[in-house]
Amino acid sequence: MKVFRSLALVASLVVALAACGGSAEEQLLEQIIENSDGSISDLDINTDTGEINISIDGEDGGEVNIAGQDGDGTFTMEIEGEDGEMMTFGGGNVPEGMITPIADGGEVVQSYSSTNDLSVSIEYDNSRFDELVSMYDGVIDGEDTTRSESSWASDDGTIRSVSWYANQNSVSVTVADCYSISSGELDRVCVTIYEQKS
Image 1 (cartoon, rainbow, N blue to C red):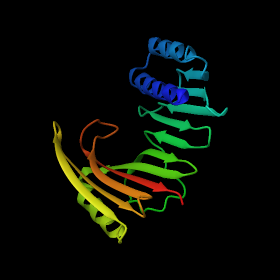
Image 2: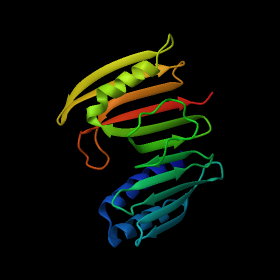
Image 3: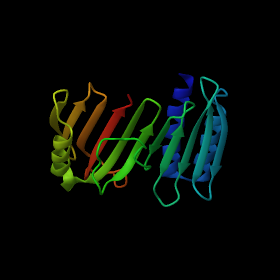
Image 4: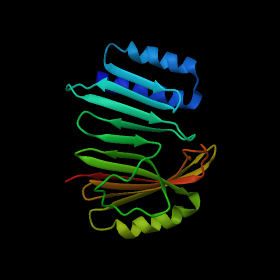
């Protein structure tokens, strides 16, 4: 549990560092991490390329590795767990072995892969909401499928969400209005897919 608390702290600090930049923030991050009761074993910040590499001692003797990159104004972060799990924020690829169909023209903003499950989140232009809902209505059907639909008002507009749960919840898909990773505006549609390996 200690490792996951450290991981949460590190992840939030890495994102803050990516947003702010500057040597003072880097020194503060370095001090906080290196004084984290020994659970963080290595830290490297490359101010020229924007790379951040962190190793944390895992609970089972392995290492958890975090790598961040801010080379072109967009920030990505990869977390590799001690059991081989991979999680990518701000980019990445569709996890290998995922079987749920994915519409073309989207941008992967988060992916996760472990020995037990796979997950991916993909951003699309918000004009494609109805098209994506129609696609998954046609793909995910059957007696063991549950579909739910909701919408609610936010300060920035209405957020619509449609979800499907299939194969005794081993597969779930959600199509929802979402905030763009790049602009922070409510102008995108996110498709989030989760698959549990059998």
